[in-house]
Length: 125
Image 1 (cartoon, rainbow, N blue to C red):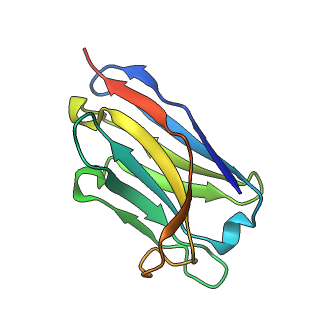
Image 2 (cartoon, one colour):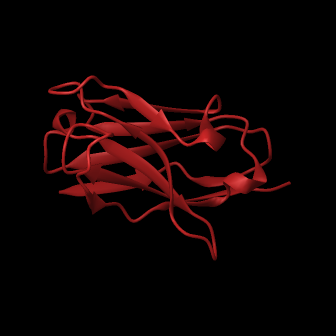
């Protein structure tokens, strides 16, 4: 099982970025995938999650600070999960990680079992 993030970079406030989480070694559509971020000196924070569409309902969840600005989506053909981030703010600066849950539901109690290495997002003028 592998998850590889890409798409991070240095942008200005108000700009957009699309992060990608390329997966391999498992059937993407059977599992919920989450995006997390960790800023220096801060705890890791859950940003968004998308449930599977097989055995689940494909529903999405967002942390309050991301609602209306971020959109999570999945392409099961390309085995990739995306996080479209619009209207970026300096407080969005962090390393962003994607992770695979042990089940198809974001709302389940199963843990995130596999993690990527992260991609840096820096929002600064």
